[in-house]
Length: 274
Ligand code: OGA
Ligand code: MN
Image 1 (cartoon, protein in one colour):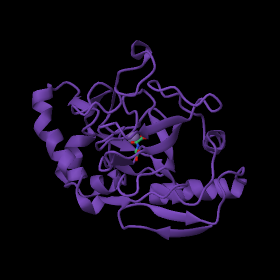
Image 2: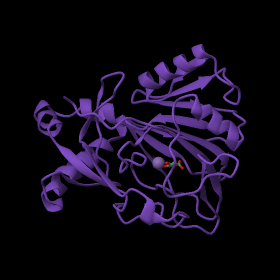
Image 3: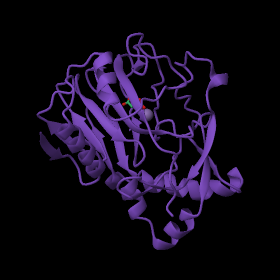
Image 4: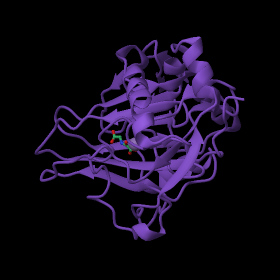
């Protein structure tokens, strides 16, 4: 395996591995430690059926059943994320962490590019450990004691998934309370966990009281030095630590088709700073 860091914020390109084949124990533990170090891993020239993508993810842990969209028949945990020629909205088109309104949000998301527009459709990734580290000691101390409400309905008015959902929403979990500063269970690193797509308010504070602090944190966490812009090629796979990063897929390719497939690995109930 060859490892090439892609930015100072986060991310590394990994080559010399075929993800369609079962990983050896050594490869798996190497990838897990690279994941911890770089937060997002990028692979290229991979040739994966949905079933192979599912089998890849299974080696990293228990798979998460996404409550909103049905998976492929042959690989039920793998969901197609597509924007078609006629679509105006893209899926998840704002800064977010995946499914953080669940009690146990995904630890890991693996997104694979099947069809891409001629230009555009990049995805921004940002390190929330970087964002946390850059806060003042006073802000860190204040945030450490807070939890917040994360909800599925809160999507900044972008309607990020409603236009594609095909499952009964009444059955899906809608919100959870999580720490604002999250501790990674293995590395112990702290990260800033709130995000503009899903966080509605701090626990025991109103939405109005929370808003100015959240607005500050959102603009802080979106500072360019914490982020990296990834340009996909067909056959690229990105594997992100969904606990310590956020991402934002750009919606800049109207009239073209972009088809991705996604699988997620279940995480722990988020741990607080203490
Ligand atoms: C997602 C998502 C990003 C993209 O699938 O969770 O945010 O680039 N997609 O499509
Ligand atoms: Mn997402």
